[in-house]
Each structure stands twice: as C-alpha cells, then as structure tokens.
Image (tube, rainbow, N blue to C red; front, side, top):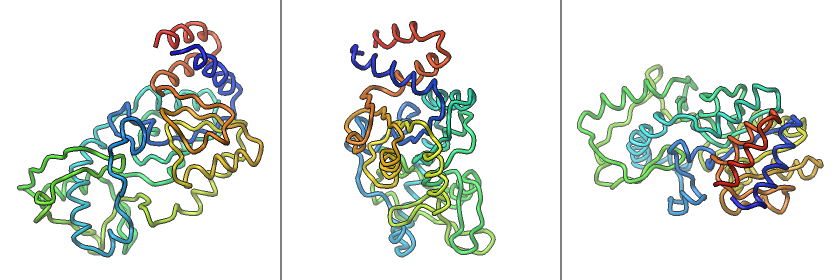
Length: 291
C-alpha cells in the first residue's frame, strides 16, 4: 500500500479514536464474507435490475422465479460469516467509539459480529413477512417448507447477488412451488425493501438522528449510487460533520467527503481496530505498508 494511503489511514485512525463515529456500511463490507457487491470490483458484471415490489406482488410467474432463485441464493447468504471488517466495527462499538451503525446490507453480519442496535435501512433477509397479516417468521422455517414443497428441485446457481437472488436458467425455475403464510394463506416476502418500495420513515429518522449526533460519518464499502445511502452523506456535509469513505473504486460521495481511501476494507479496518487503542499504531502502519 502506498504512502499516501497509509497517511490517510493514519488520519482516519485519529478520527475513529476521537469517538462519536456514525458508520454507514454497504455491500462492499461483506464481499470478504463471500457475498458479492453490485457495483464494486467484484460486482461490475452483476445484473443491474433486482426484483421490484410491483413485479413481485403483481406477477405470479415473477414471484415464482424470485423464490426459486432466492431459495438457492440463501445457501450463500445464510452460510456467510462476519469478516474482519464487521468485527472491527463491533469492536469500536464495544469501546464506545461509535454514535451508531447504519447499514444498507440485508445479511445481518454486523449483528452476528456483535454490533448492537444496528439500523437496517433495507431490512434483513433472515426475516419473512406476510403481506396480508404482517406476521414475521424466520427464514430457516421458510427454507424447510420450500425444500419440502420442491423435493426434485436440483438447480445450480451460476452466481449470487447481494440481495440473495441468483442467476438461474429459466427452464430450471419451471414448476417451482411457492408457499404461503401458514397463519392466513397470504403472500410471503423477505422483510427487505425492494426497488419500488420506500424505507420505513422511522428507520430513516433514526438514521438521520444518528448522523446528527455524530462527530464523523464513516462510509464503508458503498458506492453511494442510490439516494438511500447518499442522503446521509449530504446531510452530514450540510451540517458540518466530517465525512470519510473507505471503498474500492469510485463513489458518488467523493465530492462531499473530507477523506476518501480507495483500499481494501479487509486491510484498512482491522488495522484501525488495532490502532484506535493508540498503542499498536506503529505496527499497524508497518502492516499497511507491506500490503
């Protein structure tokens, strides 16, 4: 890693050590856990049109296609484990350095790493909601039901997307059986925000309040392409809250950021976790220079 990046990491280390950091994470934070990004270096070839709410609810064939693909994709999402970046964030929170954690991700890996009171802007794939009676249930239960309803389903995914969907030949989707709510027979959907839906206002309000109470906003692994995440950067800039971004590749937040580090999160964040106790920073710099 070049000297400029090492110096940038040293600057970010100082900001984290001061505390009051609001973390906003995106899909790039989970790539080291085996979950691909949409737009980063590992996601440049991913499809650009995820399922919309209108299509899911209005087209039975599209809904069948979604559940067939998501059933396969859950094997990757459900088996994923937190990486060093998730653990670093949880460690900062444990030390009292964070104002809060906001995530655009739907994989639940922040919580599995030990983070608390995470604001999940787009929901969580591990929860299922009935669109009629609004009952919540667990993904494991649904997966058991889908497996039982489709004993001959042996399709193989060619790729997995961050929302748990996969690329799958249409012929392999034919005949896939969708299950309904056990309580009322209503339509089941992952408890996530699809394109065409809006993030629940209470989540947005909590996220804005977290940013407003922070000394710094630290964006991790997000291209900030959609307004869902970029609005918090804009608000921080408006309110004079310094903004730092760690991401591979270009982000739409760069014009508003005080510090932008284009480097692997798996290298930068663990060294920040070491350096924020101030005693290990020299050794951390040595590690960064060698990468």
